Image 1 (cartoon, rainbow over the protein chains, first blue to last red):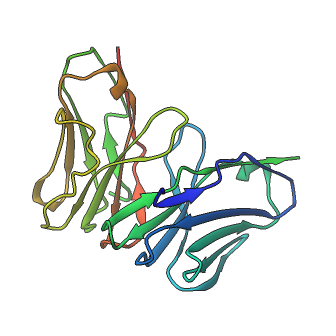
Image 2: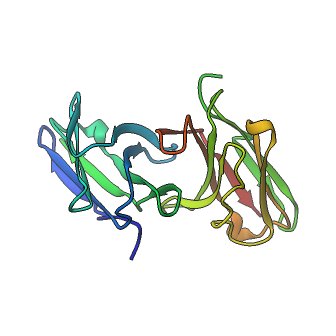
Length: 111
Length: 113
């Protein structure tokens, strides 16, 4: 079992729709969770961090954390073609004492 | 500097040569990571430095790979006797504390010919 798992996609959504990206993690001791966006040929860019159960909103982005289910999600409202990228979920694992990344979900927003 | 800085941006080397990749973390950041990303693949953890603690080297793929962090700041990743399978983008990230947000440099694209 991978420590952080994501569906590789691609997830295809029409412009203006809500994109929902999901992630599960195996280390129940993980406390910090992050979403990164990576455009092709670029390095990952941090877009959201979440540390507590519930929702955290920042502009068009909402991160959701459910520690009981070991589940993290990212919602992108009013998706734009410029949101097309690979989205990486990461968890700081207390057990492994390091930041562990999922393989990423490729999002394609089509006009 | 304002962000994580990596050098060189690109490196082409001949098989069998040694290479050194440099990472300048954000000032004051105590944690520093090295990852490797092959074309179309996810991030592969290599090594993690946290303050004065012994580094976590569990991700280094072979003994040809080594890394050091001098004075708790600049880090150098060294690959000895490079092989074609070492070709990838090498990414460095730093964070203020152990489980804080980590920020990436622009990466070093290594090509072994």
